[in-house]
Image (tube, rainbow, N blue to C red; front, side, top):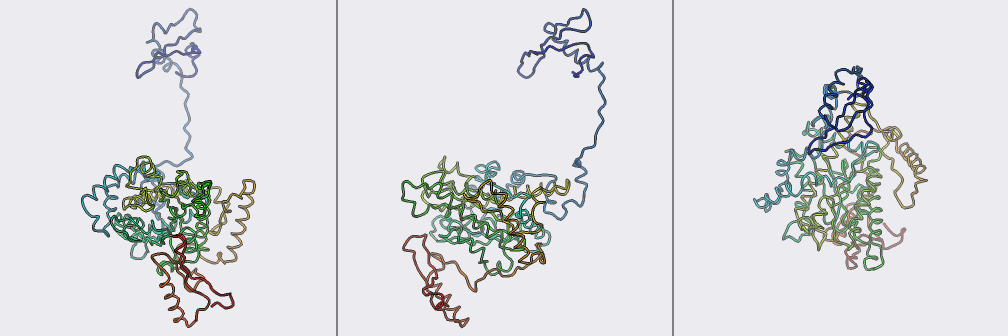
Length: 544
């Protein structure tokens, strides 16, 4: 009924009463105080008159003509007609103006299942394994569960946005012209879980790279696209933590072919080892292991992030990815077992990096239902299905990253959208780092610390001559970042005392430089956290 009820000289009662039917409401109020003398309409006795009055009012009351105003936003048809829109972007390969990770995942499930088969392990290629794979993918792990993997995706306001744009440009070029464009290079850092210890049933090898999730991720992507779209470098070292990975990134300790160009993506997969309670607190009944692990994980992971974000100097930094693949068991408190995930999410939001959690995908299944498919109650190492699920988690989260990226690119192209934070950033300066996130950083000081960080980034930008260098991603090679003549990571079961001694002796003979004041050291007897190393035995002036 039009709001101007005076046109029919009736006034509605203030309190309207309803008689409720199962699927409808019938107005049973009374209109009183008619403006036409002598007329009173008791609608309680004649409810059908309510509908008649409605029709009468629509016929006699003039409806004002509403002037149609042109929308400030372009229509979907106009947007689609812009043939030049995002034509050079990977987004042009997907539905416009928007799509979701769940949509892509569900519509491609059969193809994802086939791409998940590990051809490098023939023993796993049988009907029983196929049935298990399909059951997990189609029943146990639907898209609604896989969405839990996404903890944080980079926004439009940081250098990581340039990194996201870079990796999708690399993928687009590889798809368009694989002969002249390299695959996306992914460097994965982690411990014994990352290198596949305990992955294949019945095998007690210290590492099993073909079974581990980094290889499964490479197979999943490349078999899905039927081409070598990505190259995953598994740089895991058993018994190490994020501190070791930080030095590997900082000192450019990559395989020869990767050292020439650097990785496009760096993945920190140290959630298990960074979640290990400190040795000096493990047997202390009064120790707060929840907080201790939280602080330890935050410190180690933050060191890695800052090293990675500045590893390319003037150029676009690699996309930093955090992979939380930890479920336990290393302490009794469940909050303590989730401390790494808490620290990871805090830092991902602070530095605007990409955070993924396999633990969040299957935590309830493993802890509450006791399903051993994804979790080993007696050991931090787990089966091949857990490794496969980690690869799926990264795959789904990558689709979410793609969806978010394309939404933002669409907004930029159509609405000329840029964030306020982007206007405040130094143009093309990839050296900016926010102030470290510590207990000492106070809310009242953060604005000043941010300004200081911007000034420091600008000074470094000028000192390195970045303004004279191309900040794009078209360069095939970068200069060697390592300040060392030689470098290695010593590890139990890997590079040990004999290998180090032989390596250094050979280097000394080849270079003609004698080595004095150094020796190998083995402290493994003091616990698996202690290392084999190359240490100084004499003062500086006697060393060489």
